[in-house]
Image 1 (cartoon, rainbow, N blue to C red):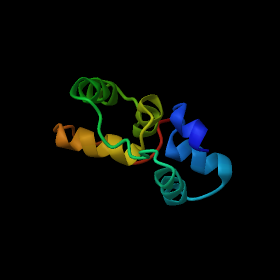
Image 2: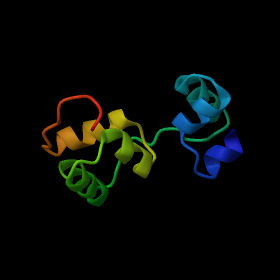
Image 3: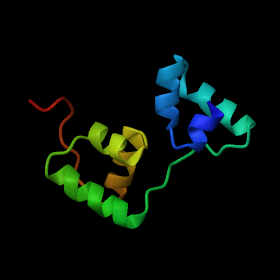
Image 4: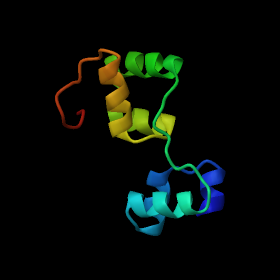
Amino acid sequence: MVAEARAGASVRQLAKKYSVHRSTVGKHLEAHGVNARRLLLLPHVIEEAARLYRKGTTLEDLATRYRVSDTTVRTHLLRAGVTMRRGGRRT
C-alpha cells in the first residue's frame, strides 16, 4: 500500500482496492511516513477545474482527474466563487 501511494495512488483508490475506510489508509500511510493528504490544488488547477465545472464536468470527474476527493474539489471551487449545480447525476 505504501509503495502504491508513493507511486501516485490516491487514498480513495487504495481504500477501494483494499476494502477499508479512507481514514484507515491514511493512518497506515502516515505511520509509514507518507503524507496522505492532498488537500491543496494549485491556483491554475483550480481555475481549470472551475472552467470545466462550469462547462458541465462533474465534481466526481474532476476529483478523478486531479486525484483528490470530490469534497476537496467542491471546497476549492466554492472558495473560488463558483456556484454549485443542484446535486444528482447528469443525464
